[in-house]
Amino acid sequence: MTLDEIRAKHPALGLGLYALEPGEPVTLEMLTADGQSFQFRGATVQAAIDLAFPPEPEPPAPEPSVFD
Image: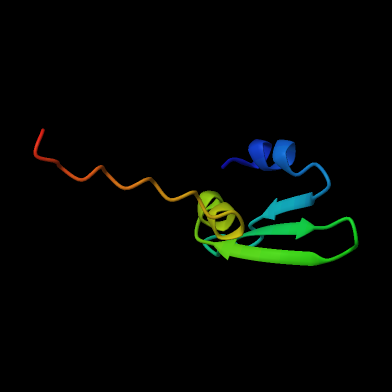
């Protein structure tokens, strides 16, 4: 998921994405409509986003059958 996709899917969230110290983790900060704040830190922008919005698991490969 990208930042644009998050904004489109969750328009009521306030989002901040920053890396203030060179070489340190990236922080994704989310603010809810009721004032709650959540922070997710990752080595990269995508890692921080994945912590906040874990990717959907890939469906398992179909089991081979006698017809394969």
